[in-house]
Amino acid sequence: MFKKVQIYKTDKYNMLNVEIQGKTLIVREINDQWGEECHTFVSRPEMLHWAENRFRPQDFVGREEELQAIMEAFRSV
Image (tube, rainbow, N blue to C red):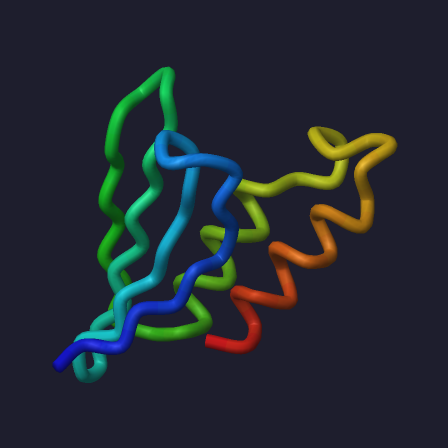
């Protein structure tokens, strides 16, 4: 059985989940504009590097606590 961690979910069309499959981390990002994107990582530092580049502070001006919550969820994986 694979462990699934929910990073965020705003509705059934906008969510981001991480599946832990042994040593492999699979990030599934679903949004209403682009559909589903799947990213596969072999290490946790690689996934965190992607998350830091994907969720940049300049995109969350005025919503810093939302960015902090997302990054904390990634760090807890």
